[in-house]
Image (tube, rainbow, N blue to C red; front, side, top):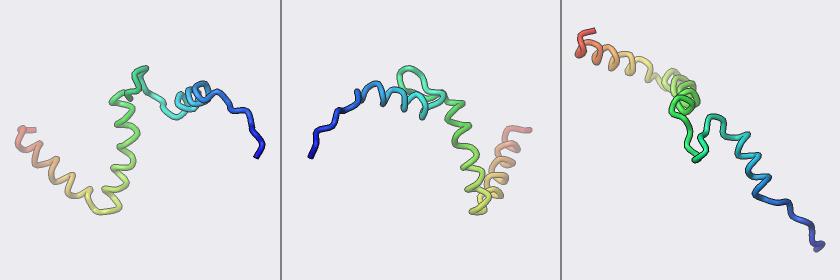
Length: 69
């Protein structure tokens, strides 16, 4: 096999990581609002598909009743 030159992995991986992780902080942690925006559409879709929306509405109304809203 022929020996091929390798790219500097750190520079390439750094660029890819910057593109793949919007909303991340320098320490590698994602902002909580960014995480919520990423998760909520899938959560809503799964709740509708599997019939969990009614259970969520029932629980939310029960909590609102307990809080006096």
